[in-house]
Length: 472
Ligand code: ADP
Ligand code: MG
Ligand code: ZN
Image 1 (cartoon, rainbow, N blue to C red):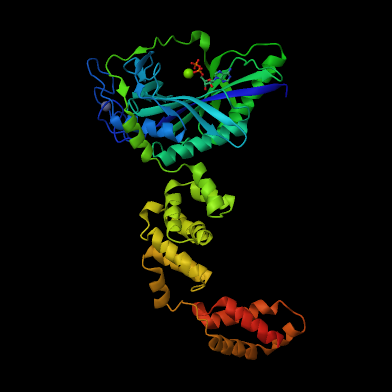
Image 2 (cartoon, rainbow, N blue to C red):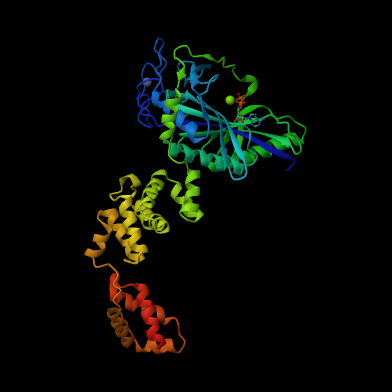
C-alpha cells in the first residue's frame, strides 16, 4: 500500500446517572415511547435546565480514567441545528471550555493522545415506519447525559483503533461511569480517517464514519474506507470531506452528508447554565475514589501474583470479578489457586446460573480459605471444586463443609496401604500385566484405589504407595 492511514476517534459514552443531565427524568433504557420526558427535556419554551451534579462527577471520573487534566473551570455552549429528534433546535454541549483536556492512553507500541472530554446531552430518536410511510419521534433519549471523548489523529492501524476502543470501554466500566456496550449504543464510536502518501507528513482530507456498533464493524469499516480512498487517490482524485454511514450487511460505507452542505452550528455560550467551577479539593476528593485501572491490575496480576497473562486478562475483563479476586488475594497468598478456582468452578457456576459476582453468598475471605486448604493439601483439588459449588449454591464455611463430609485428606499410611494391598490382590491379572511392561493398567488400578479411599484419601499418597508396591 502506498498510503498511511491517519485515524482519529470521536466516542460518545452514555453516563450511568439516575436522572438526565438537565431535568429530573429517569435516565434508563427501554420502556414505551415518550414515557420519560418532561417539559424541560422535550424542549418546551420557557423551561430552564438545571445541571445534574453527578454528571459532572462522572465526567471527572472519566477524565481520571483516561489520564486527562481536569479543568477547574468549564462551561456549556449551544450547538444550533434543526432536526426533528432535537425539539429545542439546539444541543447543549461544551465547546469552548470542556471539562477535561490533554489525556492519553498507552497502547502496546504507541501512545494515543486524547484532545478533550466534554459533557453534552443526547438527542431523541426517530422511528421510521416504512410500512405506514411515516416517521415518529421518541424523546426518551433527549437529555440523556453523554461525554464525548475526542482523540488526536494518532492511530495508524486498525488494530490500534480496536485495542484502544476495548481499552476505553473497560476503563469507563472500571470508573463506573458507563456500561460501554457498543451493540446497545451506550458507547458510540465515530471514526475519522484519511490517507497520506508514504514519506509525507501532511494529512489528507478525512471522511467520518458513523454507525459502528462492534469492534469487528470498526475493523471492517476502516478496511473498506482505506480501499475506497486509495482508489480515489490512485486515480488522481480528491477525497471529499463528508460523513459516511457503515452498512454492516454490505460491509461498505455510503455518503450521509457532505461538509459543503454541513451546517454552521453557530456555537455560543449557553446563557441558562452558570459555568462549572470545581475546586482543587473537590477534584482530588473524586480522585481518591478512583479504583485501580485495568492496566495497573494487569501488571500486579502478572508480576506480583504470578498469573499467566491470559488468566489475568480473563479476571480483569470484569471489574466486580477482579475486585473479588483482589479481596481474596488480600487474605491468602495462594494467588494461582484462587485464580484457578475462580476461572474454573466459579465461572462455570456463574455461567450456568446467570448470576453475577455481586450476588454471591460467600465472601472473598471464604474463597481464600478454600484455596488455602487446597494448597496445603488438606483437601484435594477435586474436593476444592466440589466445595466451591456448595458455597455457591448454599453458602457455608469451607473447612466445616470438608469436615462434615469427611473430605479432609487422611495421611494415614497404614490405612491406605491396606486398601492398596486389597486392590492389588483383587486384580492379580492387572498386576502381572503391569509387571510385564503394560503401564496402561496403572490408571485402572489407581482408579480402584481412589474409589475405595473416597475423597478423604490423599491421591498423591495413594499413588506413591501403589508405585512402591508394584515395584516390589
Ligand atoms: P471538527 O471540529 O471539524 O470535527 P476536529 O479537529 O474536532 O474537527 O477533529 C475531529 C476528529 O477528526 C478528531 O478525532 C481528530 O483526531 C480527527 N481528525 C482530524 N483531522 C484528521 C485527518 N486529517 N485525518 C483523520 N482524522 C482526523
Ligand atoms: Mg469535532
Ligand atoms: Zn425531563
